[in-house]
Image 1 (spheres, rainbow, N blue to C red):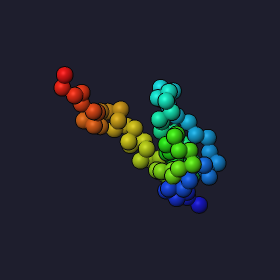
Image 2 (cartoon, one colour):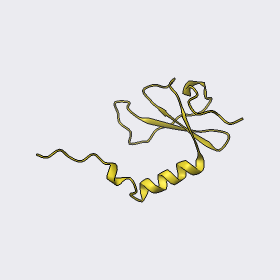
Image 3 (cartoon, rainbow, N blue to C red):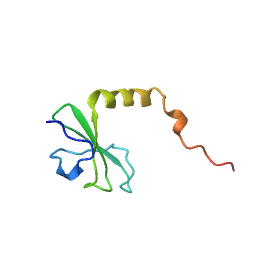
Image 4 (cartoon, rainbow, N blue to C red):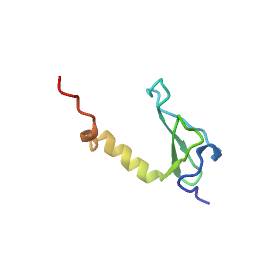
Length: 81
C-alpha cells in the first residue's frame, strides 16, 4: 500500500539521510527510499513532522533539472552594496 503524503515522518521505518555538504546547524532536508519506489522528504529539524512523498521519477526529473541549471533563477540575489 502506498504511503500517503503528509504522514508523520517518524512513523516511516526507513533510513533517513542528508547531503554530505549539508548545513552544520541542522537546517537540512533529509530523504529516504520507500519500498513502493517512492522517495520521502522531511525537514531534519522536525523529524516527527510531515513527510512529503514523491514518485522516484519526479525526484529524478527534479534533480536532472537542478543539475542542468533550470532553477538557477531562484538563487537569492545579493543586496546592492
